[in-house]
Length: 138
Image 1 (tube, rainbow, N blue to C red):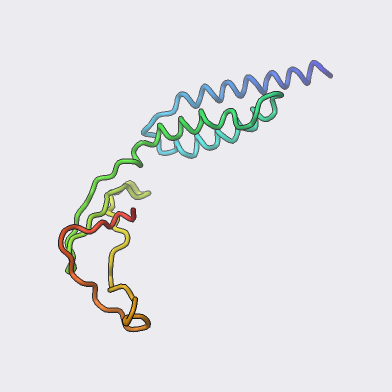
Image 2: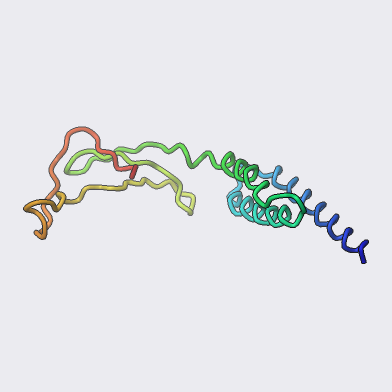
């Protein structure tokens, strides 16, 4: 009975080590990296928690570091400018889930702010501006 228990614990450790080795074989260009890393994180967290004397959070930081290093493409965006009747806006270009490049513009002013005398009135056209207005959402 004891032999079976220790054998199963040893086989669980071996399985954890094999899965850890698989994490090192990930490729940056894989579209399933995010799902794979997160699923491995939860599996390895469960393995770490079962071992005596090991915190379940001890595996979190290395797996998180791998995840962050494999996703550098989400940090840098190509800036895109567009001219509208009120002025020029700057946004960014990113990839949609379909893989196509899309231009994103956030916080685009479509009317004058409803403050003061404009409160509870019909929207007034936005005033024209000089230069480029940030529409990246940040």
